[in-house]
Length: 103
Image 1 (cartoon, rainbow, N blue to C red):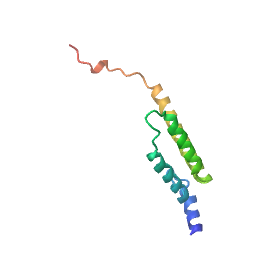
Image 2: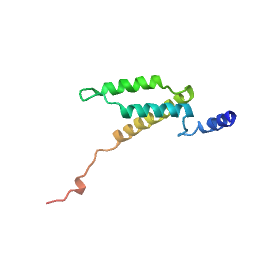
Image 3: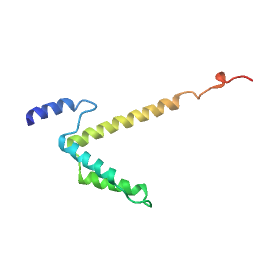
Image 4: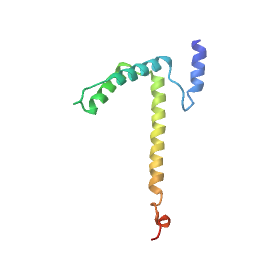
C-alpha cells in the first residue's frame, strides 16, 4: 500500500487542496484539540496563546513534504491578498453623489 499511497500522494500534491499525510493529520488534530482546551486565565495576554501554539507546533511537527505543501499554500494566499490590495488601491474612490436623493 505504500507504493500506491506514494503514487497517489505525488499526483495529488499538485492539487491546490492536497490532503496532509496521515501522521501530519494526527499532529494537526492534537494541536487543534489542545488549543481548544487552552485557558491561560483571565489576565493572560494573547501572546500566551501564540507561545503555546508555537510550542505545540514544535511538539507535533509536520513532515517535510506537508510543511512544504503548507508553505506553498500560504504563499499563494499571501500573494492573492497582496494582489487584491493592489486592485482595491487602484479603484477610483466611491462616488455615491449620483445616488443621493435631492431634497
